[in-house]
Image (cartoon, rainbow, N blue to C red):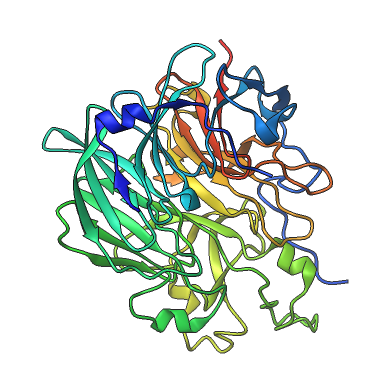
Length: 436
């Protein structure tokens, strides 16, 4: 049963540390990041995870992460299904839990202590995206559930004045709803129902799109199409919307190059293509899926990528002219699976990470060998209004044999200058603290 808990009820449910419930083809284009098993990123060092007082390490017990030199890493909180995070003005963290169906408030207790955990709402339907904004001088929480986009007013540690902005959204496939809010407008994604089926483009309600709606529930409009799974949504310093997009798996070889591989599924190609995407979203943007694949030939830095016709859905280019598709500003190594995406300007992170974007990847689900989960940083260019080549700043969730003890989901700068990373496999939130 769905319940939103008032301040008194929430106080009665306060816990410290919620125990986790875990148990001969052509050469591939080089990746922009060295994100393959056994190939650690440069400039990082390995640190053993400590555990905050009151937290339970679970699967992370005795484990280490690789972080920038001088940083420390700590299991800060345990919460089954920890997914997306956002900070409230009172210094508490909002945390969604996906299939656990809860929206939590993590209240820091200071020092090396785990936060106090308050359940703000329970019985939710796959809560994923969460954002915080201000309207009429009051704090508003925006949440994406499986079939709806909704808001609450937040005051005194509790939620109230619930409003559903959009309801009846489609589920299944890439069904999680992610959100970003700016100037009274909420952007939200509706992922595709399939891996790579052109029929999704004809579905009603729309699939593989980004839409936007005002905080008063009016003006629900289509913003971008051909967005297979745009989970990462955030506004850049110039106010424009960006998306981090999960591209398709097991795609056929798209080049008529005399290799004889056209239209076939060639593992060496599949492992490194198509690149996942980070790019600007403007009104009317078309990202091409499933008719056009990002084309990284001759672009080892994976920046400013064009597209190539996808053999199964667009062999003759008639379904969609790929030359008209919005270029991919930043490509990510194929099957990285970006989820969390946040710009860092105005944060308390060290200067080296305080004016760009953090992209948190979940890691591949069927690549061989698996692409590991990670957090990367991409600097913002104020002149060109673009993001640069990303570099990995957090890794270590995957062992050399490809097995994983954790999977990063989201990374958000905290008001204390630390970086907080969620993990839905280990059911944890890590606090990564820069050195003095």
